[in-house]
Amino acid sequence: MTVIDGRAISASIRNEIKAEVAKMKERGPVPGLAVIIVGDDPASKVYVRNKGRACEEAGIYSEIIELPEKTEQGELLGIIDKLNARAGINGILVQLPLPRHIDEKAVTARILPEKDVDSFCDENVGKVAVGAPRFLPCTPAGVMELLHRSGACIEGCECVVIGRSNIVGKPMAMMLLKENGTVTVCHSKTKNLIEHTRRADILVSAIGKPKFITGEMIKPGAVVIDVGINRTPDGKICGDVDFDSAAKVASMITPVPGGVGPMTITMLLKNTITAAKLQNDTNV
Ligand code: NAD
Image 1 (spheres, rainbow, N blue to C red):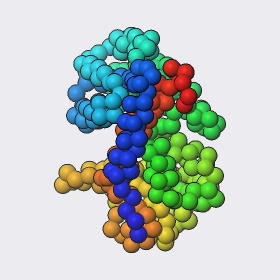
Image 2: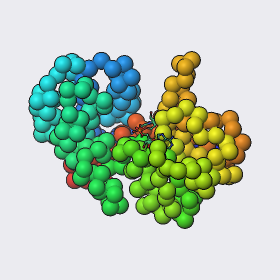
Image 3: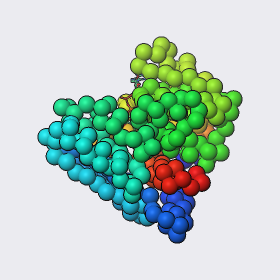
Image 4: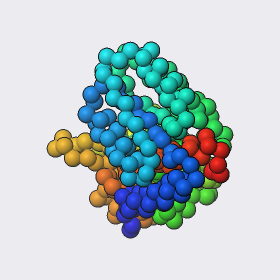
């Protein structure tokens, strides 16, 4: 059984990214990312800080725009419009969740599709769905990198995704399908979940329930990818998968923390580079 080391894989991709940014710098401007955060949610602040730091380490220009909780939607839209028009900013993301008085959909839709490095807007979601992505949504893209770099077989294999959210489950299913997996999507209304999970050669769990997937639900030799990030009552982080029982059955498994988590920001950096190349009309 192999534990897929997301930290190590992420570090090697970040080295590749750093080298690519250095090459871009020789020819022209470095890629630029703007991150907007509204309010004081502590978890969001940590995520935003980590994104800024990751950009800095990769040589990517970043700008963090911190706005007070009471910011009006109109003001936020105006800020996005200005960033849309700035040549040095290739990617824009708004950290979610937003305060309740702001319409998330209206805000994410305001970002130019060419700068929507989270791949949240309808146009970019549609491009993923038809198999011609501009940007890949970061978390499922990170899962694909883990599968590729661990040598997991996707083509023709039974891939079961648990969770159907727009940011993880659905795009995950699309990406596995694009690589010729035979994909099943399970969710909270799925009957006999275990019958599906036990068929899976690749099982991706994105539910948000601690230790919900146990060893008996897993096919012997399966590759198990745990996207879940849950907090246990004693304050620790754990995944959706009961690691100890699952590790006895799986051939490869991602830990939490240290599996999918480190990949998400790495994929954001990759999308920012892609955005810069598309906007500066160089080879992608
Ligand atoms: P979500 O709440 O939007 O979706 C959860 C999904 O789980 C739903 O589609 C629901 O149908 C399904 N579900 C709930 N209960 C179920 C059950 N009993 N059986 C089968 N399916 C069930 O969550 P999300 O945004 O997709 O995130 C899922 C998990 O992944 C969360 O723990 C989140 O913190 C984590 N996450 C991690 C990263 C990362 O970078 N590693 C990124 C995004 C989300």
